[in-house]
Amino acid sequence: MSNIDTTAAIPVTRKHWFALLACLVFPPLGLFLLWRGPTYRRNKGVWEPVPRRDKLIITVLGLVVIGFQVSRIGGGKIDSLPFCDASATLRSLKGAVETSPAGRTQGLRLIEVEKPHETAWSPSEQVRLCAGDAVTNGATLPIQYRLRWLDQGKGRWLVEYQIN
Image (cartoon, rainbow, N blue to C red; front, top):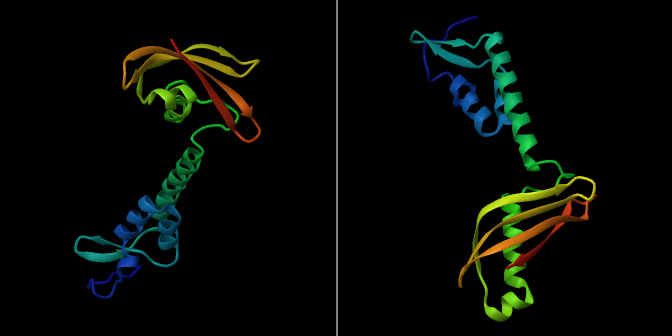
């Protein structure tokens, strides 16, 4: 391993800190930059090549980051209904309330659902019953809603509600 005394001779893409930053932002690019040739780091005022051991450690960490990002893309399993307090559930519930005939006629706007919680779950029927308090532009009322599958193969589900 030879040491290099000047920083002008090393392009930014060959510096250790740049490869680490690229691993955090876009892991495949960072790993490519790390392994495509010698990468240098500064040690006691002198630029030296990064040892293979350090590259392996960074590669393992980069693969862990990639695995975590891939696991979060779907937001969960496709064959499970979302929970009562999930943002997708509450968005669908808001859309169902506001676009229903009664909601359009009365100009009803669902601002938020306070204290959403599950009241029952039927694994055999794949139905989740939920309840909470609907804060609308008119009042705060108890709301009950249920989630069921429209097409489980495509991951499509339906929310049905009743405001008391």
